[in-house]
Image (tube, rainbow, N blue to C red):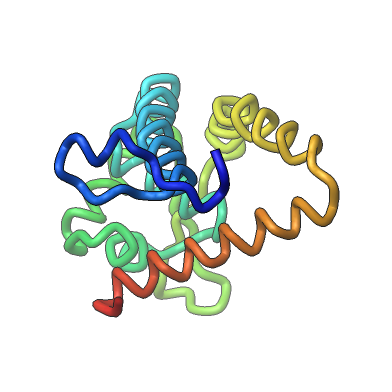
Length: 160
């Protein structure tokens, strides 16, 4: 099938045909949701807990209010989430060195190691696919993914 060829399977359902790559991206999004559920089960955490841990591990320590903002939850709900993560040994609260009145939520080294161990096979598998591509092909993939990211951000900000 050519890159610009449309998938015919969607026409039967009354949905306008989409490009094959767009359907493959939708499949990846579904598989990502499945992978998230698998990681949640391995780490014995819920969806919001995993999202919070992801933000903490990627972006570094955050305050409970910032966690709530990122997860679109009230500050009270974010406090309950942080309490739950702390009770499970996944995070600690530490004073912010820049503002001693503010607390930061920090993943414990053990929780971070367990989380990375849980996702490492998937990350390694994805990197192995990239390793089969030439640098020019990798640049095309990176440009495509950056464009997809921009499309999502436009959509979420109310743009088209």
